[in-house]
Image (cartoon, rainbow, N blue to C red; front, side, top):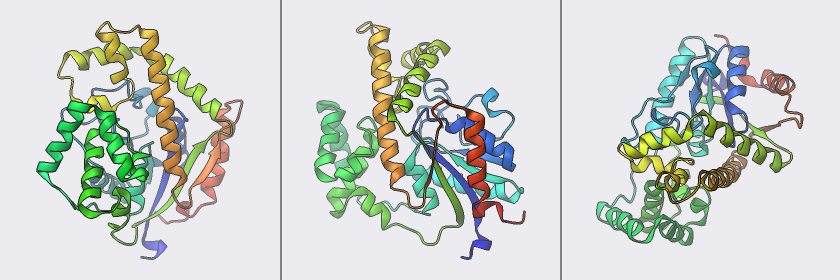
Amino acid sequence: MGKENKIPLLVIGGATASGKTALSVEMAKAFDGEIVCADSMQVYKDLQIITARVTEEEMQGVPHHLTGFLPLEKSFSVAEWADMARKCIADIRQRGKLPIVCGGTGLYISTLIDNIVFEDNGADPKRRAELELYAEENGRHALWQMLEKLDPESAAVIHENNVKRVVRAIEVCESTGQGFYEQRRQNLKGDSPYDAYVMTIGYEDRADLYDRINRRVDVMLKQGMVDEARRVYEGSDPATAYQAIGYKELIPFLKGEKTLEECAENIKLGTRHYAKRQLTWFRRIDGIETFYYPKDENNKTFFEKVKKGIAKSNILCYNK
């Protein structure tokens, strides 16, 4: 497929708390775009604060898609997200707007831009039940360690709390003799329908990003993070919620087993570890361009630098 027939696509990735939301809104306003959320937890409507989901005020009137629409009781796969994202992008483009995919779930972004279709290779309901029982009896970390021995590449990017994905990765390894992401690479459907400009937000000093993470957790706690976690915990307490950093760490406080200060520190630690995994994933994307945030956190300067980078790319050279 020639570039003239492809859909122009701006992709903004990066670690949690790196500033993706504000940047994506600014770029959407500058280039007449709409935003498709690429975050595996922000799809859930009951976790507004815990997942730092974009608010109406932060949207500034820019349309956002695939955010806050799913109940926590529902599971949601990368294949389902990719299918919905492709439809959103086609619709946005058909209306003459620039599609902008923004989020920190690298698997979602890679699946979309590489045009990957997952095949249900190695599905074994009996083995899946055995692995899930193993996690219940021995803990999620023990299950994750099983994956780490079989497939270190997948273990490096799949969090141990995501039991469903850990189980799936182990299934694929055992049934095919290949790693989960090696199998994934073999499921490339073909030429991508997108001419994607993929960028990420970076920090020259990792400590600056970690400081932003710590400060954001403090803000989220002031915004009512504990009350949101309590509503979920006292409601259905679905397993899906435990994949969201910030929920599971507050459970000991809700049970009266730890202080809020202790739990807050665990949230910050867990978020920093997650950010490291995100950065590892994005470094593996071919052709990705990194824009480093300035030390003085001058948004205006940073936004202008990114605008110039996007303006030099091919994605703005299409007739609407």
